[in-house]
Amino acid sequence: MPRIIRLTWRNSSRSWQKKYRGKVYYFSFTRSQYSEAWTAWLKKKSEIDQHEKLVQLSEQEDELEALWQRWRANAVALIEASEPEGGTEKLAIAQRSLAVAVEIADAIQNHGSQSPPPKVFDFEPPLELDDAADLRPSHRKFWKRAGLPANIEPKKSVGHNLDEYLAEKTREAEAGQASAGTLRNNIKRLRNFEEWIEPERDASTIEAKTLADYRSFLLTRYTSAATAKSDLVAVKAFLLWLYQRGVLQELPRNFTDKSLSIKVKTKEVEIFGLQELRELLAKATGRIKLYLLLAVNCGYLSADISHLRHSEVDWENGRITRRRTKTKDRSENVPKVTYELFPETFALLKEFRSTHADLVLVNQHGSPLAHICRKDGKNIQTDTISKAVRAFRLQNGLSADLPMKNLRTTAASMINNEPRFRGLGELFLGHAPRSIAAKHYFRVDEHTLDEPLAWLREQLGFFGERTITHQKSVSAS
Image 1 (cartoon, rainbow, N blue to C red):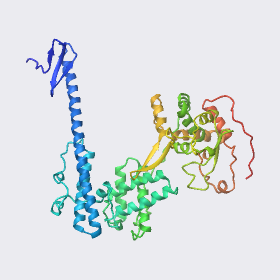
Image 2 (image 1 turned 120 degrees about the horizontal axis):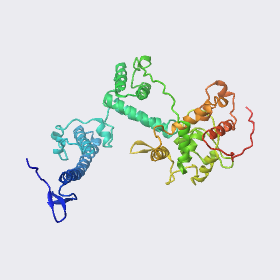
Image 3 (image 1 turned 60 degrees about the horizontal axis):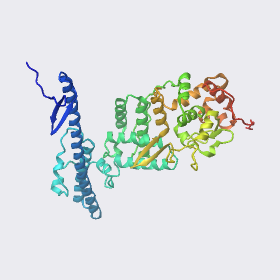
Image 4 (image 1 turned 30 degrees about the horizontal axis):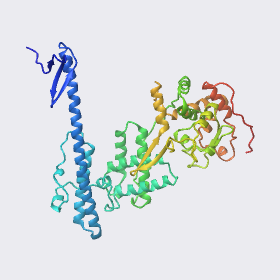
């Protein structure tokens, strides 16, 4: 059977051509290379079709966006009109109107799918009460998604109480009484619980079976027992808050039941190999090298580096004295630890020292290198340091499996495993002392870590005399 030729051979241009949707495409193959030209055309056609599809979807998204704005405006107007009079009919229409707005918002978010538009697109605002009855009922999440007031919700609902609980915790974090990072994680955990239990549910009906069922759900949802446990702990803290507020008349009977806990296996500590660490430090330059050296020299993570203040650095003798950023506000027992900087670390720190009034290191815009801010009601985390270090490792063919935290882990392990410095790993990490004697009777000398850090520097392959000198003193306890 003769082969069907779907392309046209042009002697003048010595190429194959194809006319598609009013435009001619040329493929530079010899006359005997028809199969290759056909394959090239199929690839080109796929690109053309995909581009046109994206253009169509973009136009559809613009139309949906405009439609969403009309529906949302209609909902706002109805709510404002109903509040002074307490009119339930207008409020009912507003709820249905908002349901349409959010369904349209879902369509905008998933506009690339092949599913047909919802039936509610047939309606245009303003709605009449008869039309509103044909739309699906509104849920609390619609109000939240559209950024509208939620004061019509029953105060006993899980959703309403969770909003109050998280608002209270947010105020605590903003006042420095709680960790912003923990808050960010707990918001996600508790919103997952809210979705599972249904926001409209009466919070006072939460019982032992609810808690047991959610534990089972977490164990099937997550492969990590640690993640499941963290979620369950966050939920139990919320339930305790409900009890203290009188929303729950009593805690679930299995609240303190050990069988409800989730067991987590202790992970083996992962550290860098010495040769791997030496290679990492040898290849690094500039700011990247400074970040790595601060992590190894002082056990600092991104937050510690970002929050380092000019007043915490002895710019004459090359020493840093401070409490860890993560734990300094949690306990008065967290020690101030003094680290003698490697000459290499100190030189780079002076080179990149900023003119910021407070912070030693900032980004090109004068902002902290790692921080958490609120945007559109959400906590947004920025960590320029970890991103830069990871990118450097990938660009240089170095493993990026272990995060920056493991540089701190590696340095602490090396110090603690050296017989002469046994027990100093805890001090290097800046951990609060555990024993009564360490808490109340011992005062740590500021030069305690000098010798371990000098030894660590040699292990990392930095040789030569230490250029930083100091006058040692003995502090009375």
